[in-house]
Length: 209
Image 1 (cartoon, rainbow, N blue to C red):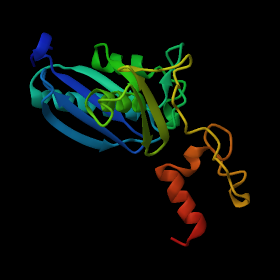
Image 2 (cartoon, rainbow, N blue to C red):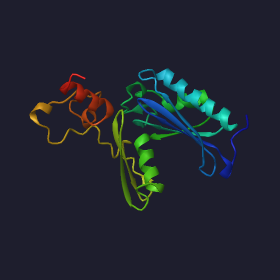
Image 3 (tube, rainbow, N blue to C red):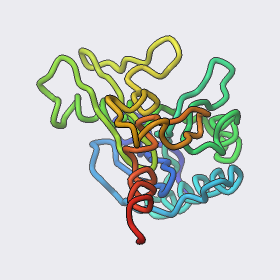
Image 4 (cartoon, rainbow, N blue to C red):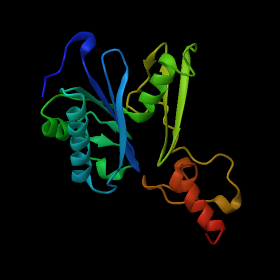
């Protein structure tokens, strides 16, 4: 297999690691999509998640015929100690995720919060391309958001700027207090209501389906 190319010819692989599915896209140096596919995320299994990512990268590189740079969008953030934190995919928390992926792939990778990646994409050439400030919200297995100002991601001192999933539910009614238990240890976080699992759980509380 050919090695990574330089300049505009460099191949790029981007991975969206979600709580339910993991998706990969490969781009050439001009941004043209070469392939895209997804696999179920092995929820709760850290080592299997690492192997899934490494396997998807190898599969993609077999198709494009060369080694590519790799960037990963993940829930949560990388702490100052290089461990993952604040991930609703809780099996990642407290783990040296970036270092472990680099060991498997034998190269440096880039990693960033998935909501930050989404907000930046919209700010560059999406719905927020003409805006000075962009707030991009993600509602999936979890609830997150990113903020981009003047084309740059605002990460904040603790790497969680823009995150709103662990704010309390605004104006809760009596039957909504104290709210469902969240993985963070509190009750009634917005994420326990406004997310895929949160909405499914609320449906089950009010119906027999």
